[in-house]
Structure formats: structure tokens, C-alpha cells
Length: 112
Length: 113
Image: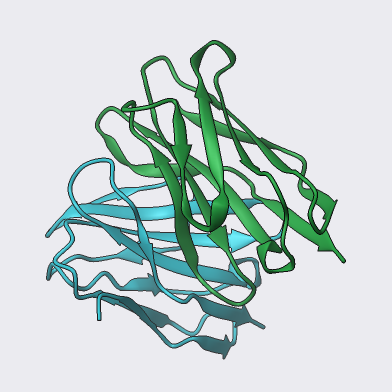
């Protein structure tokens, strides 16, 4: 089954404790991206990648890191999480061109 | 820079009534436009997509959208709302070399019995 998977689905952590949210897709897509969803603000792009070893900042990259060492994986790293990073996070992938994005199920992160 | 504006954070309709969700974009070149739907506790899924082949685009679940260049709009409609249509709807735009779309703030559709 074609899908984007994210882990964990739910995470409660404390300020400053490094964490990684994994994202994997099995569709051989070139493009992958991370979004955060907050009430009233919609989806805001954090980082995106158009190919292996190619990443770029989105609209709200501060406090986040990403890497794209393999085509299928695009982990999101929070080196020192803060409460304002409490949010619902989505990973998405798409094939080359202006094509449909396939979204993961989301990761709900709470930083205390 | 491209941007998307969705008018109305909430739209409430009665079951069987017309659904109209508004989306306006800003773009100096022909854009690619999308509508996505997010059901409660789920990720987003594509409803429909405009790629310049036709100005009226039909999507899943009876939804359609019309691209109007003169108005820079891409409003989503459905003739008759169903309870199962209650969800969050997002308009998105991508253009040129930026293949990762920019999303609007979303419109929550509420359907009353």
C-alpha cells in the first residue's frame, strides 16, 4: 500500500530534550516536506526537500532541522524543543512536478 | 511570492444546501491550484487539482472548483451538502519552480441536519 508513515503519532516531552520525528514514504517520491498545523494558522511549511541531500527552509524553519540521506526518509529534528513548538506535524511527499502531495497521519507533539 | 487567502475560517450550511468555500490566490504566473480535505484526526487528502487543462475541475465526493483568472479565484462548490462533508478544507497553490505548495489557513465546514 502506498503510504507516508510518521512516528511517533503522539509525543509529550519537556523543554530542551532533543527529539526526532521520523517520516518515511514508499512511493519513490522525489519531494518531501514538513508542515505544522496550528489553530487559525492553517498549514505552515517548515522544511522541504527536492532530492537526496537537498533541503531548503520553508516559512517557519526556526528551531527545526531536517536531513535527507535516503530518498524514502525525511526526519524532523528538534534539538531543543520549546513550548511554542507544541503543534500537529505533518510529513508529505510528492512526485516530480506540480503533483498531489501525499500526507502522513500526523504527529501531535506537546512540549511542557 | 505566492499566497493563498481563504475567506471565512468557518462555513455553516444545512444538509442538502449548496456548499461554497472561497479561495483567492496571488500569482504573477499561471499557478497550479489544489483543494485538500482533512477529516477529523486524519491527514490531508486531495479533493481536486487545476492544471490549466480546463477551468472547471471536478473532484471526488461531488465537489468541483472553477478557476477564474480575472478574479484570481478558485472557489470550491458542491450542490448539496452531506453530513459526511463536515471537515477542514484547504486551498493550496504552487507555481514555477516551487513544486511544494503553499496552503491557505483552512475553512472548517459545518453541516447541520
